[in-house]
Length: 98
Image (tube, one colour):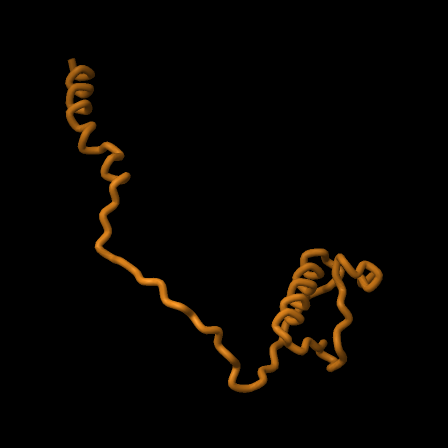
């Protein structure tokens, strides 16, 4: 009897918990598309990136990606000693550190 009563009550509650309410999402917030302009730096910045070791493939790939991004954005990329970094990474396998 209890099971029958439970099933009967759950069937009456089924429309209240249906997913139809989720399919029709009514939101009062609207947005407008705005054109963005790229920002320019007002002065030259010096950035520092520290890696624990370039013998690990993860840090080697991160270094390669940062060098590619620096080249794409026209950023001068130097090592801590001040000399220019040689491109290391998977495409330049001859320059890979040991």
